[in-house]
Image (tube, rainbow, N blue to C red; front, side, top):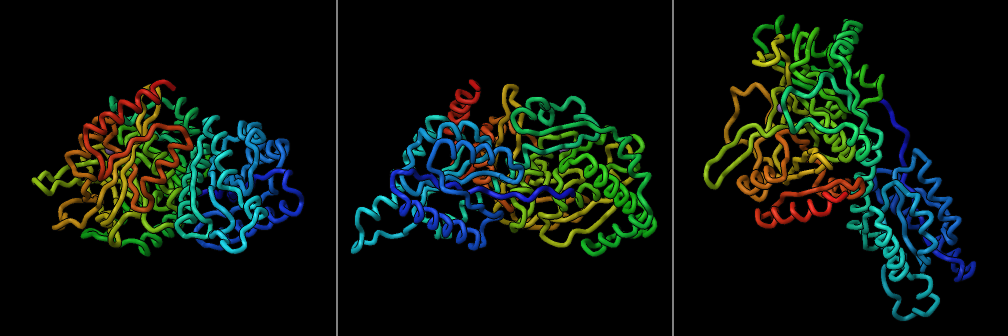
Length: 496
Ligand code: MN
């Protein structure tokens, strides 16, 4: 995957000239301490950069202009150490188009009961300075996250880290290229959508490439590179076969496709892609193992031309980078409807990412009933148990809507010995009946982006920053409340 420019977050401290030089010096040094300590805390995924304390409208405007034009700046954190009259911020804030975190903190953790005097009171004024700043961001309706708490606390730092990860996904979203090999599956509604609107609202560029382009790349792949890829598969995965020649022929074909796909994606700068089994002319197999291993490297993917889910999978990969857990393309496949113990079995015809595997995956070759190609090699495994989310982005015609369900993946009570694909068994929250009724009422599709690395809060933050409708199904959901939520949401977003 192509390397992107290193990203930073800017730390902007607000004040004013009224207090005199001594106080401002103290503001600068306190602010530097906070930035240094937050960076040293080890929780933030990217570094905070200290920027000069802001005391005039001109300075604020210039700094925001720089933040907007600096490709390396993924967002700004604002904190008012003292009072900072907020009319000064209007010019700068009106230019800001990057994620904003309003950090409501204070340098001192505790009141110095014995020594407190008016100098201390004037220096440590975020309690009212941040309310002034909050007023102007509310009045200007600036997309923002507000985090309150002492900066030294782990609970505060972990929330800043989470916000940063959502902001990194915003940055990725605005630069995302999703390559489509083949169009949307014929007659399918939910996987399709308005690509122009996706570029306007989400920043996604969704160009199409002929499957013949991929076939050309495949022809140029060196045999020695296929050998190396097979060695890599051997390190990562178990091999299962009865006919060695047949197995290697089919697995090598996937290795060739993987190398070609990665080369092509990197040449065009794409970090996500979709395929369609109806458009495979010149290919020997539907890409299976190739897609699975590319997802493990961080690429987003959606099957049947589903570029929207491909984009979401990529964003989950960006948010969860370096965290425990993984992210994958997923499909609601079939149910276990035993009363009191209802479960959802998620899988796809091939393409589930091994980053969510419980055990070492196995490469197997089996026939595929659709696609009219040779038997594809694929990774077979069972998903890890534990808390996870499934999320989908759908095109509602006038807007995009993100639907999310919190779920609990479980260890299957029995093996799936005859199932030739990767799968995950889960219990949706609050339960399958309510969760699936709510999902269907919200118009969520059968394809989702699955993650056991990030939580609903990451996606909620992302949706807030991008100004995209977001509806969530979790342990608190009831159908009457959810129906009303959809109605309120329609009232708000339908007007946009
Ligand atoms: Mn599908």
